[in-house]
Length: 447
Ligand code: TYD
Ligand code: MG
Image: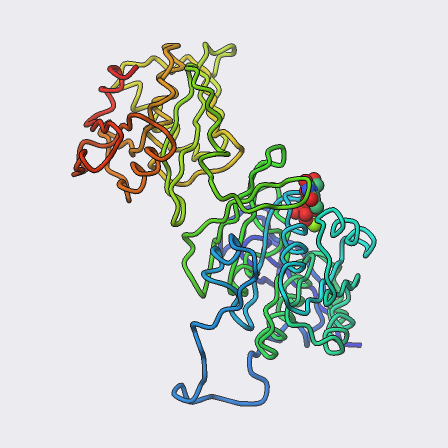
């Protein structure tokens, strides 16, 4: 039995200390340091990516950077940068119930590869029921309900899968380490073992990871540093749309997103985001307007909804779902100062329809239009669309790939689009009226 010692870890940054402290000296977070028991030998072990050889000559290393294994799931391939890279380790994070297990099982059932699905959370019967619900079945998928990494690796040796899926990293435990599953040392060790396996056998490994209330993958941040790719599955559990975003990708850009719809028969790729994210009946309501956003290679319209009402309590409420709350506060301040709105004694609620989250600041102008519209109870015409960033001085700033946004607005049936006056656009190329705005004050003239 190896000797054990107590080590203190920061849950946030993964740094290690010899004593407990209230604040982590490395990342400055409070109350993140936890105690863990580690055997002396294990605490020092690192990950070795090539077992037998020492240093290699760079010229002699064979690496085909273009080789990708298509997963058969169009949206997942897009986010991965064209498919799976042999030996890569992909961490899939998301809130409980968002559909991580569904996405992995469905992908496993669609890929023509031998897949071993390690389930530490659900029984084989539960997984079978899910597969039946998905209406997919094929030989070549093995389910192994196990959490002990040694047993997992001996089964992996026996089964020789092409792809390994682990659901979830928080349930795994390595018998080499004394701490309980889900603890930082366990997560780190289990992940290190999986990475070692992936690199040595060139088998792609998917690791599912839970997300905490604060929206970070439970366990040390170090897990995100260890893997090659971090994907986040997000959306509102009460809506059917899900966005798959890549937060880190050693083999591609982190720019792409995948859009899925959760249906009774599993996740479906969304072909036409405009059709699903925009619920327009042709009626004009105050407080709603459409913005053309760009996420990844795609541009699509989304509906922003605002409700501005007199504050019931002393301090006005600001509630934002689906967009950066800080940007919304900035837009509120700019509207107040430059467009003559009185918002300091009003509650403001802002929501993006469909439960999706938008990161593109090109949505600013639509957000401003919705707030303005709700504040004055003046509807924005439903065939108007917006694309522009709002600056601190109230200027409407140009946004990336405006031609694509205008084209998409036209395709989605809008008749007029408001953009920054700084764009050089030839209006004759489009079948949609284009109006350039210089400053947020001009929003007063839209109606
Ligand atoms: P799940 O994949 O279990 O989520 P996670 O692994 O991220 O915790 O997804 C569960 C939810 O998805 C659950 O609320 C039921 C729903 N669902 C469907 O709507 N359709 C389906 O075909 C399946 C399999 C699940
Ligand atoms: Mg699950």
